[in-house]
Length: 287
Image (cartoon, rainbow, N blue to C red):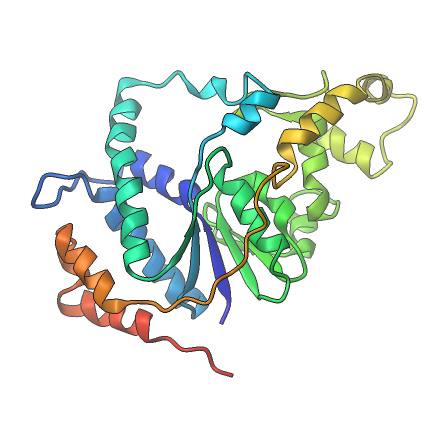
């Protein structure tokens, strides 16, 4: 069976901020709507890829990157009251979800100071003997594509290998995509690139198709330090990230049921929902 590594934040945050997500609460009054939608998606993905081998990577904070680049992600601090309210409902659900997944026997990873992206990359690079799919909606993780790892972009519903990345994104090896980010920067993370260099120009430079007489070419050459500094934070994983291994785990259907009952996730332990989850936990690898 394939092993699916989940960039948990890139699944949870769109769920929490979606206008289609209705607020739900447990019998004790705790918010559960994002947990509910996340588990629905997990069941869908299990059926899509015929596997129950999932590893979930959680955020450990961005302190290590901010030491290198103090303004990292500062651009995300301004939010509308509506979004802030939704995020305040999400934050306690992340902790609850992690606990529930562990109760069900899944491998979870969270390391203080390192982002989910780093942990995903570490798991991929240190386990080439596994057949891996990385589940994410984050473009930064395209650089993790390897012969043994494809990237399933949840926003596009597309499974990318190196060839598809070249065809649909940029015509350079996917594992070199971090160089594009180092040159062009990443506005979503508040990373400034070399002035007047966008992603297309960066790709042309890296593939040696940018005319040397072009003014931007000399601009790149003269601002090499920006590229070097950005490389430290956009290349995954961040230096110092632990080398993570995929563990042999035993899933626990009873543990999952107890979690669902504790948090009033009724559709998952009654009627057709219980049948679907029983099938999920009963999947076995065919050797």
